[in-house]
Length: 256
Ligand code: COA
Image (cartoon, rainbow, N blue to C red):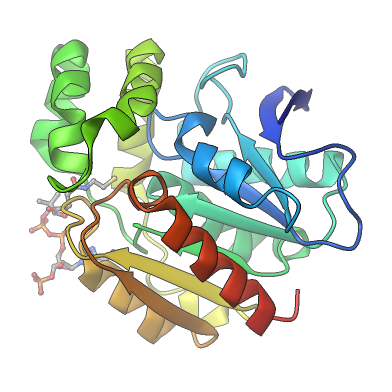
């Protein structure tokens, strides 16, 4: 695994230089998150695709502040994809990262050969209690994070690096992210997407319930959906081998 930076965005890559013959998965984390979410993809997909997991501006090892809107994040990721000259780029986002992926597909189609939407929706209203807890009691939010974001069947030890990375994040950046999600709504625009899209939903996802993914599947005319059992919102880390196989099958079907 290689750590690098481009355009102020820190990222880890399964290898460097990127292989021009393979698709480049650009993994985008959720609100207040970091590249740590995608460790199972960067390791598990190494050698099969170019696997790049980024820290959005203001997150993880990236400098600066967070951004106030999904549009701004999408612009920053599109610039990043161009800067690293990613061969056959396929953005793949969870939750807020999935909102950014939809925005990339809509506003920056030149930066996307396909898209992967995991645990996300075309509209991401946030429960007022989450906003209040992040704003007034960030450590309480971090302590309760796994209880609402993961399945009870997942070994919490497996997710410890993610909660530790969340705890190192800046509270005001996480708050800005949740507000950006709350304002996000591309429900009307999805029919204009033309590249292949994979939607992954999880049986026990309480934050972005499967009905959000069903809406994506039914509204994006190029979408297909896979539903994963015994996993919650953090499915890429809860079920890495299963998610990786679903991604590889999708890329094969899309001839990428
Ligand atoms: N895809 C499909 N349908 C959606 C949707 C999406 N992305 N977002 C909302 N809807 C649906 C809802 O299911 C609801 O349908 P219904 O009336 O048939 O039940 C309707 O559109 C209205 O949705 P919403 O405005 O979100 O409902 P609300 O104002 O009653 O509730 C919340 C607001 C925050 C309580 C609710 O959105 C929620 O529980 N969100 C999930 C939890 C959360 O905070 N997630 C964080 C994501 S970052």
